[in-house]
Image 1 (cartoon, rainbow, N blue to C red):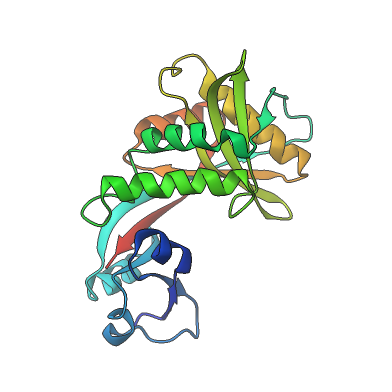
Image 2 (cartoon, rainbow, N blue to C red):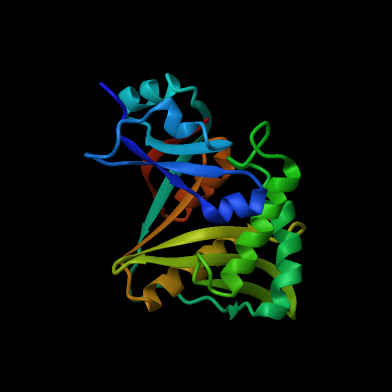
Length: 230
């Protein structure tokens, strides 16, 4: 049985990394995947539910390799969610945020041998900058004390009843001070203000500390997925 998947070019990633990047889109009725469809691209990525072992095996036959295991966590959002003081990032905050981002996200699916450390940093710098100006993510929210930046979280409204954390980071040097918990409260309050009932955040299985942290803040693991690259 063939793999049904369309190969969708990723224009933004291709421009950012200077390589032809694409992602597989799985759907009933999609094209039967072929080597010819994959060959024009330098990197093709696929996100597969961990339970779908037949698809994992099928992609392995095309040369796809396991790169990362993603854990998706979810909170229920109530209208009376506890508030937490924050400010919305503006363009003048971008240089500082870019520097924090490049130092923060060291455990990532954007890793060697597929992506260099420089390329990984380039991605997260661009991600947080785009969030500030409302591209991809909707906004970037800052936690400050006495004008000192302690951390940030980027947010995106996904559907009428759901939102997602894009990036969440404590500024290096401020860990262990409850900053992460406060950032989660900021994210949940923003979600409540948007009228959504579910908030999701993804992390890597290798980042066990993050998984435990989100669970300690009341999140539930809802899905486990594999990222595979060719």
